[in-house]
Amino acid sequence: MSADDESAGFDPDLIRANITAVKSRIAAACEASGRDPQSVRLLLATKTQPPGPVRVAIEAGETLVAENRVQEVRPKYEALEDLEYERHFIGNLQSNKINALIPYVSCIQTLDRISLANKLQKKLEAEGRQMDVLLQANTSAEDSKSGVVPGDLASFAAKVAELDALRVRGLMTIGLFTDDLELARPSLARLRELRDQVRELNLDGIRMDELSMGMSGDLEVAVEEGSTMVRVGSAIFGARKA
Ligand SMILES: *Cc1c(COP(=O)(O)O)cnc(C)c1O
Image (cartoon, rainbow, N blue to C red; front, side, top):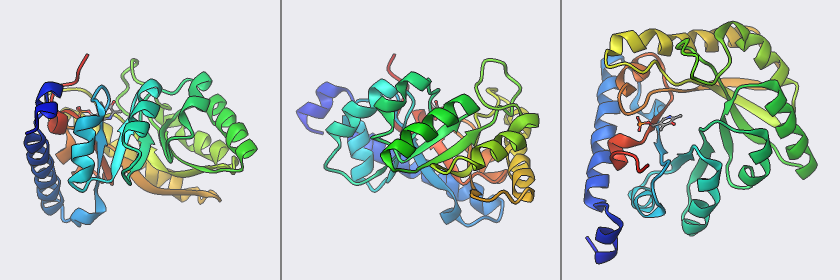
């Protein structure tokens, strides 16, 4: 460990060991449910982490990183500009922050209202660009969470499908927060059911390949229920800073 890393308060070896441990958990869950481990990607949820630990993870071979807060996106992008990796956004997005976000990310996973979709469409269209998006569903019935309520998801998908700058790739949810994983399971299974329901609509211009679900505490259940992307923060980087 260099003096710099120590003063920044993180241990690169621990981060690398944590990544290995998380990957073993993903692999074990895939094995238990008869899935190919290659079918689940690990996304690093790096909110509140400074660039240093994120750099360690990318240099260890990770390629997918996501932020929650628009104000953290550009500084980390700039600090890690020499590295190749994919950047997603997984936080609540206010329309007035679109301009500060979209130059730096290739996918917004938290699209949950048509007003936001329309604004993104307009901005991207003006720039002659497209952007991948996931539709966020609120599958846990917790009022505090963002996301489209399940009953409205199919019609929301149909509306977003008409916006040609937005490439819908799948769905995202945050599972029920609980220590009892069996209580979280239905909120994760629900996302897969919603995906199947939207697939049956055969909407032009959208794909339903991705299910972004599972975090440090519930990734095994999420993988068993069909996750293609687990979003892991604290199990790799430790507790969040303020
Ligand atoms: C913070 C966060 C995660 C990661 O949570 P951990 O429990 O730290 O793994 C995943 N998804 C979203 C949307 C988050 O905000």
